Amino acid sequence: MFEREKLPANRPRATTVRSLFMLQVASALVADPGWPDKQAWIRLRPQGEGPWPMNLYASDSPAGIQAVASGEAQFAIINPAVAAGPAVRGIAPFAEPLPLRAITTIPSFDQVGLAVSERLGISSLEELAQRKPALRVSVRGQPDHAVHMVIGHMLQAAGFSLDDMNAWGGTVRWDTGLPHEPTRTAALKAGELDAMFDEGIYNWVDLALDNGLRFLSLSEESLRTLEGMGYRRSVIPKANFPRLPADVPTLDFSGFMVYTHAGVPDDAVTAFCAAIDQERERIPWQGGPSLPLEHMCRDVPGAPVPIPFHPAAERFWRSRGYLD
Image (cartoon, rainbow, N blue to C red; front, top):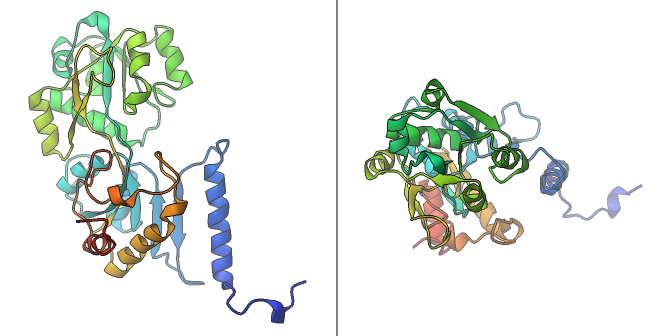
């Protein structure tokens, strides 16, 4: 149908056409609200060769950290950014310090919320550990989500675990979605829950308060312990949520940090950063239709960079004026 001599001389090669076709189709699928499969593992290699030297892991799971550490993936994303803190320190579930390096962080301001029934009269996580009440607790049903590692470390800092809560006579439920989504909202309104532990608190502060829950604060001692693990403290402010009795000290859960391994070659990292810069106007984020790179390389609220940059990434962002 198309004669060879009529094709443009500067046409893309066959390998480019095939790969761009599939990547664009995948892009359209994940943008479709009705398409359920949203996470991606992208593999790139030279035409016809056996190994896949470039693997991009587009998920929020700590499993991506292990994939980057082992060389199975070269670039991945973690949410929250501070979940990389325990990894570079070798704190469980990581068996040894991992040489992760930052590329950039897509902004997404967030915090962790630990809320329990107000009838208990408990206002802090440490008091919960002392009282040991039997609670029906709802946590996120996605088992590989980073929120479970973060909450596990928060409870550990206060001296207990979810298993301990079961041993106190309570029940830990793994429910689908965030607290403001239908399954967990229905359970809360039906009186089936005494506690809700999760992130994304801006979606469910009022829901929790409407249904008799109180957000627990963390003590200074617990916060310092968690900072030693690589986390960052935050505050759920009464100024933003006037119905709170007071500010609630908690942990930051911000940022979709893009990261790599310290051993990934400079030229690969530079090319990756250049691609981000080139495509920034076509990549949406939660605050708009194009990436705000001027805020993504500076370790700012909402876009933390809690681990060192890969040297090639740091050089690239400086050369573009995104990093002082």
